[in-house]
Every structure is written in structure tokens, then in C-alpha cells.
Length: 106
Image 1 (cartoon, rainbow, N blue to C red):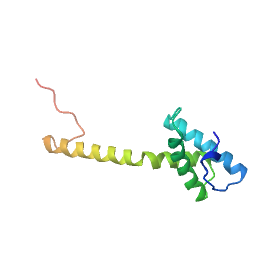
Image 2 (tube, one colour; image 1 turned 180 degrees about the vertical axis):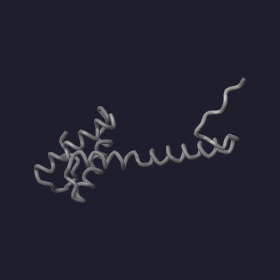
Image 3 (tube, rainbow, N blue to C red; image 1 turned 90 degrees about the vertical axis):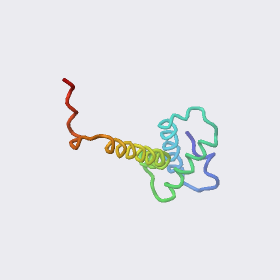
């Protein structure tokens, strides 16, 4: 997928543009964006360009870094939610040993 329409004046050599396009396509596939509008692609491309300006040229790493950046808030929210459930569960459970299941009723 060409990244050229999303460069907004940023200058990269032809090979780098090709690599960034590969990273864009990989990221869109990973996010299952399908036929999303250009605003979504522009946001993804901007993240890729940001990492490329910092020197990264590996499309796999560019894709992974963008995915981490996009999913970061979701992952943190899930960790918080899981920690909250664990703390609630530990205050309501009288068992000291959480590694063993409770005995079955007779």
C-alpha cells in the first residue's frame, strides 16, 4: 500500500517509502481496517512516519511499534481491570491458599 499520499511533505528515499508502505499495509491488516477512510490510514501512517524519522527502517518493527502505540491504552485498561478484579476477589475469598481449589461439598 503506497504511503506517499500520507507523507505530508516528509522526504524519504524510494526504498524507505517502499518499506513504510509495507509497514502501513501490515499494520492495516493487523488492525483489520479493511476499506476504512483515509483519516484512519493517515493516523496509522503518521505513527509509522514518526518511528521512521527516529531511524527505524524494518517494516516488522515499525508495524509492531505502531500496534503497541495504538493498543497501549487498551492494554493498560485491561491490566487495571484485571488487577481490580483480583483485589476484589481476594477480599471476598476466605481461602488463604489461592493455588488450590476449594474442597467439594460432601
